[in-house]
Length: 483
Image 1 (cartoon, helix red, strand yellow):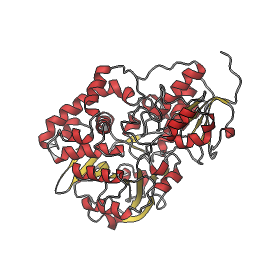
Image 2: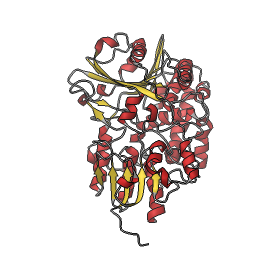
Image 3: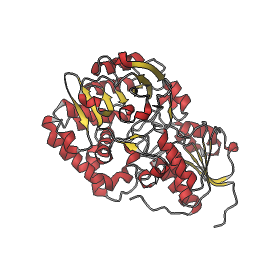
Image 4: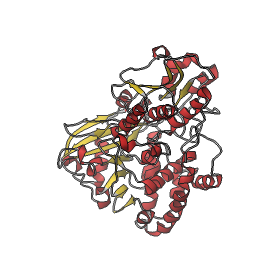
């Protein structure tokens, strides 16, 4: 087929992990691809900066990367050749409990299970099955709705994954096991009583057991820089500092893929869409926001429980019931006094993050979308519950409310870092109910952000599947499925 000559074969708007994944796949298939980024540096949620004091490097958004290291697409790329290396904490994640020992997610299922007392065998049986099947179903779970390669393995996973996380947790007896499930499921940023929130917990625990929860050396920006480096080594081009607000700003191309959410897509290209597609995009639902803090510390956080002192990630929420209630209150528009706090300690294992002998810490809690309430004191009190004296080791801090999060990354509408709520209503139909969620009603225009399946997280799979669809539609290039 002869195509009219254009400036580029394809353009990707946005350089987050999904935009870079889409660009790489198209460039790998012989196309001439341009990535356009509105900010002066690339990365989207993959940026690192000295937010507090000189020499203290903080991840502005994403911090710990179980999905990146295990991504069906990323793991096949030579990112190590472009400077990316991962560091693996001794404990992937710890979940402290008041007046009792912490639950832990360790690389080994057996090691994790042995801290769960009466639930040891139940956990071993559950996660043994999930991890055994995960390599067969990862590309199906992390992708659009379609007939799976291994339907029985996926069905086995789905029996538990489609449950509310509270229902899965209540299959266990100990407060450690219940809390571990709840803390994992709360990554879903919605009430953990919602259908299919168990899937988030199972995916995070399975990827931990199979690949770990690693820290990218030097900061999350290292992932973006490696993706960009590989893309450019293939001949791809990247343009920064060019914020796109109209299609008229773009060079000519046969396909344009947008690593943005429906709200921005409507502003840029809404006039090109059918009335029904526009109506569907306008009904797209965004989720809760986050309030984030970064600290420069004089020493490690003085956690009481030794497991927390060795963990790259710490879930602060106490019991299943406390996490359930806090997430429900937030969903109802309130600010709980004891929120679920997700905390990361990258500098414990990556000394490049802070000057000698010093440390960094990274944390956020969920808040109602668009909230501007200062949650600093509430978050620090929650840390002090498990680490008395924490406030005494703080040298400096940097905070971001939902408005500041959206200013940092326009994809974070109202502080929603997932690009839209990932509940059962939008799990596979994000952003609209359509044969392919990546196509729009306008030929040649695609959406490849976390507002498409499988949603938020640093895995690049939204971009991979969108680019795969564009390659087939526009260029008649069929890409084989991932192994």
